[in-house]
Image (tube, rainbow, N blue to C red; front, side):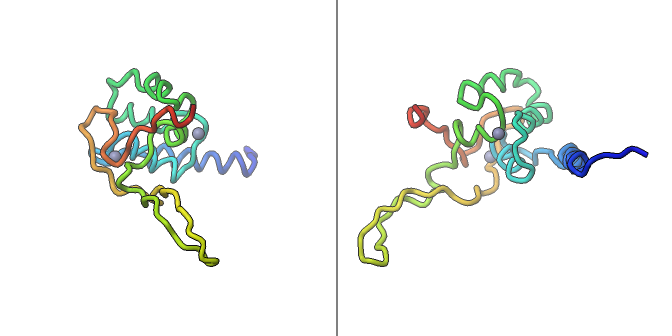
Length: 142
Ligand SMILES: [Zn+2]
Ligand SMILES: [Zn+2]
């Protein structure tokens, strides 16, 4: 009988889940799809979800990974959310003044939303994100 470690077993289960569960919903854009998957399954250090999206709905977008790299997401899916896209400004809690317990005025930074609303959808075959997302200006990280 084949003996495998718990880790290997868990990886197999995860792998099975990942290969059966991930399908972009109708019209779902690349960025919402990848966000949803990374949230659910985590990043494994590759572009597996972006590539899966392309293979499923945008097979002609052959330059996808080159494009993502150019936007700072060279190596894996979660980098898209660190370097390339962030939730659109209108979804954030704006910066505001708050008074702390010792009566000092404090300035609260804008806060990103916990969750992004359902995808506003995109044209099938496109790898453009919907209106939920905005490009992160590169200057911020330089
Ligand atoms: Zn990653
Ligand atoms: Zn979307």
